[in-house]
Each structure stands twice: as structure tokens, then as C-alpha cells.
Amino acid sequence: MSDTISVTFRDEGHLRAHLDDFLVPIEQALEWTRSRLAESPRRSGPEHFDFRAPGIVGYGGLKRILPWTHGDFWAKRKGRAIPSHLIVGRKRPTRWLCVWGHWKDGETFVLHTLYPGRTAPREIHDPELPLSELPVVLKFWTRHAIIVGKGE
Picture (cartoon, rainbow, N blue to C red):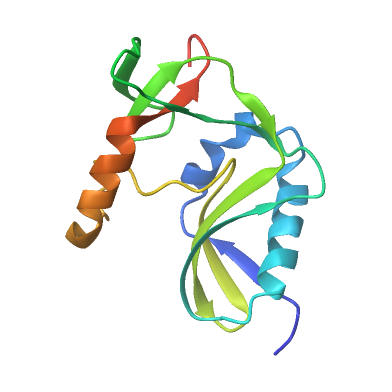
């Protein structure tokens, strides 16, 4: 197998929705992602993982929602058709990149999305959410919200 990994995009619009969170050029984040994928012994099926990049990649963050937490809400984010669990706050710089995608073949990776931050399960309203994942997704998203800045 070659260490040259080709990355194609399933939906560039979904990727563009995260561009404002990056501090490095998206090309740099994609290069780090290609390098990480080249190390993967598994070259088939879906992939959902995060990895620590060599430097700060951008801003991200989730906030744990406790019973006394106030201010969380559900709304559509930029470039999205489904609502997300959100809370206004300050995003934090991160070295973590989250990758969602699948292998088309042993050398081609189809990127669904790439964003600064740690992995999280699909969102509750995701139309591609398998019913088997619903219990985990409900538990996670009732206890976590995506941090957004004022006016986002």
C-alpha cells in the first residue's frame, strides 16, 4: 500500500461550515490529516477519530451541561439544516483535529468533515444517525453543548 493518501470531499459545504474555527490554513489541516491516515493499518470502512496536531489548529469546545447550567439552547448553525445543542461561551484554542469520513478504497479517503476539537457522536437530529446509536447520542447531547460565540 502506498503512503500517498488522496482525500476527496463528500460535502464541501459541511467542511466550509467549520472554516472560521481554523487558525491554520485548511490545506495544513488536510496535510496533517493525510499523514495521520497514511499511518492507519485499516484502509476500509468508516473512520471517526481525533488526533493531536503538531500545533494549535483552531478553536473548538464543548461544555458539559449540568442540572443548574443556564443558557443552553437548540438552534441551526451556519451551513446546517438540523439544530444543534449550543451554549454561548468562549471557544478554546486546541491542537486536536476531529476527522469523519470513510475509505473509498485503500488509498482514497472520503472526508465528511474535519474540525478543530475532540470527537463527539453524531447529533440527535442527524438524518444519517443509525437507530442503534440513538441511546449513546441522546445521553451525550443532553449533557453537552457546542460552544458558540455571541452572534454565531
